[in-house]
Picture 1 (tube, rainbow, N blue to C red):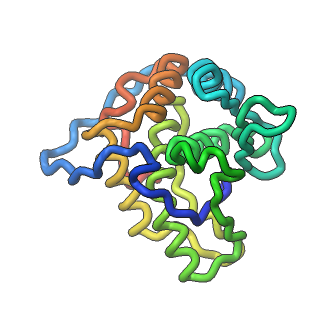
Picture 2 (picture 1 turned 180 degrees about the vertical axis):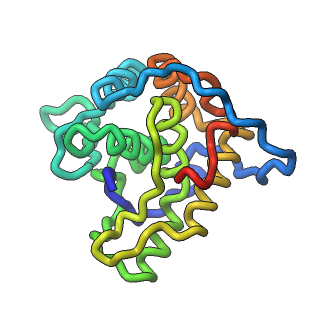
Length: 215
């Protein structure tokens, strides 16, 4: 998993997320015909983030980390920092997803005040991981599409040999459809738009981009 899992629970008041809506019962549209797009690398993703969020939120997206980490501004650092692993684009998108879920109070805490359960979690711990990772991974999928990149659901638990459950995948898929139908929180919407402008991906919130069997 390119991004680190977090077991903290974010309340709806902090998440800035719209109410979850039911999956549309009408048939999904036909798949969008492939169009030439630019696949954004980590550098381009950083540039898109800085362009949209640096001035307003005093926050930068920064690579080359051994492990992902969020550091609020302190001491000599005037900016909050979202640090992702090495030069991994998927890690960058995953960490931005966690930042978009975190409310203002959590963004004043290192790593948003979450606990971190290391690789090798028990089945009970894994179930809790999946519960709190639905919304971040749904946003990561949306960001990935907007950046012209593939997305895979991650259980982030290689040592225990536990892959993502079908229930987890379905929950992420349903959340993506809910976002497509009801709209995204403000920061997530701005980031999707910035990525799509750079990549040339059309209609990133069109449900036709998203298929459960692909993840």
